Structures are given as structure tokens and as C-alpha cells.
Length: 210
Image (cartoon, rainbow, N blue to C red; front, side, top):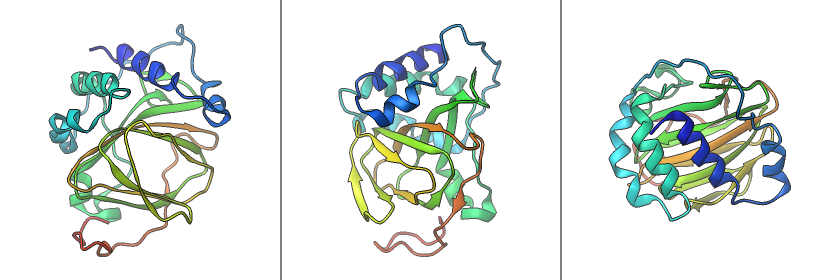
């Protein structure tokens, strides 16, 4: 599966959603004739959970999950944080790959689009950023924190909107999480501001990952 094929499948999935929030993002989607960058593949330890994603997908997201798993070895996987932020265990279970944006194979300074992969039993602590964001979980039901709403389970295929500056966080249980993300506005390569603190999860999880 080519990276272009993955991007087309992502675009098809996004086309299933309506609403002004997503429409504002899609207005910045690059045209088909946008130039391509040559991106060197880069693996990360989190890819060891790729073979556990398919059972956690739903009908709407399964084509994109399949394409991403097939293309994973050809993608450049990155990490925004270092061991000093959340510890080595977090880095072993965390990674993202940008498809469109300042660093992805399709260049754009208006929109970033990529995927986030989190391993099981992990908390991505509360953080915020200037960019407005949309997430669509693709595989794995995780719990998400958004502003003052509290932790809520979010299933694959849901659209989650994070306005600029809002605090948000994610927790996985026994399933890994694969999610599609979109960013617009602000610095598309900005490192998030961490709002959570290191410590034991309130549900009794490990204390060395946040």
C-alpha cells in the first residue's frame, strides 16, 4: 500500500462526516497536484502493536486501518516528547506519523493530517496547543478527557473536536489506540503544553508513564 493510497483512504473516511467543524479543516486539504516530499521511513517501538489493531476497528474505519498497517513500514514515525517528559515506558508505546503538513510527504502550511498510535495501558497526560484539532479514533476504544467533561470512552468512528487551547488527554486499557488527527491554525509543528503531572493513574495503573 502506497502512502498516497493511505491519504486517499483517509480522505474518503473524512468525507463520511458532516458539520461546520470538519468543513473548516477540509477547506485546507491540499489538491491532488500538490508536490510530494521524499520522506525516509523511520520505525518506532510502538509499531509492535500493529497486529492488534484490526479487531478494534469498525466497518467505517477498517479500510484505513488496513491501509495504515500495510504501509506502516514506509512511514516516518516520530515523537514530540523525550524521556525527560514522560519516561521511557511512554516512548515505547507512543508515536505519530504525519501524512500532510510541514513534515509529511504532502506539503501544507494550512493543515496537518496524520495518525497517532498508542500502546495499551498508557495515559497521554493532559496537554493543550494553539492549533485547533480533530481526532477520529480508528481502532481501539480508549477514554478521552476534553476540557471539564471528564473521562469518556470514545469508540472508533467518533469525531472528537478540540478547540484551540482546550485541555485534552487519552487513556488506553488493554487495547492499543490508532487515531487519525487533523490540525489547523497556530504552529503546525508546535510541541504541546503539558498540563498533567507525572503520577499514579487514578484507576490504579502504573506510575512511570506520565
